[in-house]
Amino acid sequence: MNAYQRFLDFFEMSNKERLDGLNELYFSEMTPEERAKAFDHLIKMAGGGEESVNGLFIADAERAAPIVKNLLDEKN
Image (cartoon, rainbow, N blue to C red; front, side):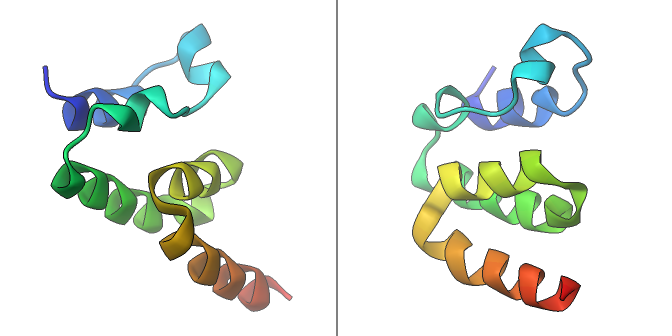
């Protein structure tokens, strides 16, 4: 199984690993292209709460900062 598929499978889990949340291990073995796809997937989920926002910063903190700022501005 490739790293991107493992990342996608995370969202289907309902066990302790899911409760622990996303971490760097889900991203560390991804290619740059997979990491970009994961980031885009998380953007679509960004309204989904803390888990997806944290994932954005793990995947690419530089890209995540302005996106999350915009999300926060929209909520205010």
